[in-house]
Image 1 (cartoon, one colour):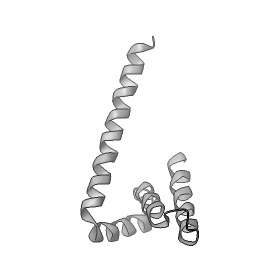
Image 2 (image 1 turned 180 degrees about the horizontal axis):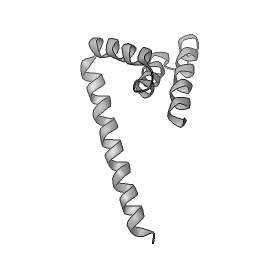
Image 3 (image 1 turned 90 degrees about the vertical axis):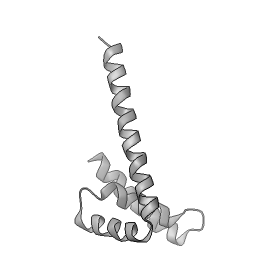
Image 4 (image 1 turned 90 degrees about the horizontal axis):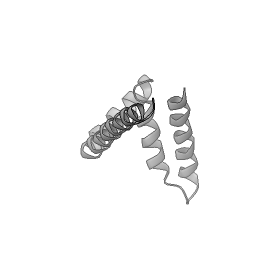
Length: 84
């Protein structure tokens, strides 16, 4: 639920960023699609199109995601050892 809300929130920011000069609309749209890609087929198709256009950038973001997940797992294990 939180992941879905975050993804749609990023998409809304991206759409706002397309009309407001302060926000980077394309970046927020890409991040929203990245977050939602496992849950929705339309987001998966959009991510595939982005990957065809910028394959190196998508691989870099996926590698960053894997590192963040591993870091979170390690921190959770450390916290479980610390707390009785």
